Image 1 (tube, rainbow, N blue to C red):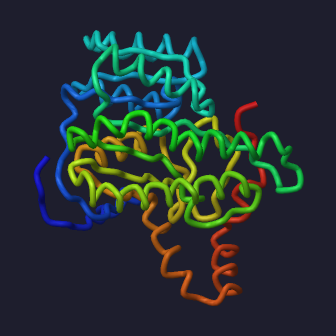
Image 2 (cartoon, one colour):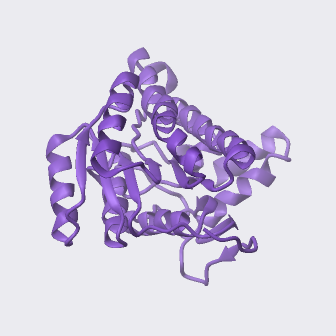
Length: 295
């Protein structure tokens, strides 16, 4: 890694939501051991394929054995014979620690951890079963602690590594029918921010990135809608995966997409009633009205 000046990069017209915040250097992908949780489908799969294509040694974790086999086969078909797949339920702490040991033994210390696994319920608060709420936090939040605790010590020892947290725009603004999801993703944003502060003190060569996208056109959010597609587009999978890879390569600390989501922070200076009015005008709290998701 090497240092460079901080900068912000705004996209040219027609490119949805490209806005980067604070870069400190560049991370090497080729030859690095990369773990992608929830990597058997969706964004995780695309990120795994892209990083493998750049020469990374990729290990995919997921609970779907068929999906694991497929993505490992896809990666190895690129001529990368180092891909590995591990069945792992990241909500189970003991299982995470055990699989982490097996992962490091197979391909060496992990250099880049991508905490991508996540779930969404998509129901109003009082319609949420207690078990669904617990699962949202177990997978979207607590799993971050278990996976990072498993791999971070070796990164700190070498003063080299990168922890990527896939959060959400819903981790920056509360959304109707996403109470458990939003709360779990707010926690994910706080996790990254606190971890970044600690690492700056003890191992500045270990980087973190938090990714906060609006809805993505995956099965996970099937049925969501947006009132102003030009301002708040439903993001394409490949676009988001490309942005995640770019964040890793260039050590971007925070990536929020599309650009309009950046106005959430200054909006909080408004009185609550005006903040809520802007969110209603943009249709934020109607986005989940026709949510179907994965059934």
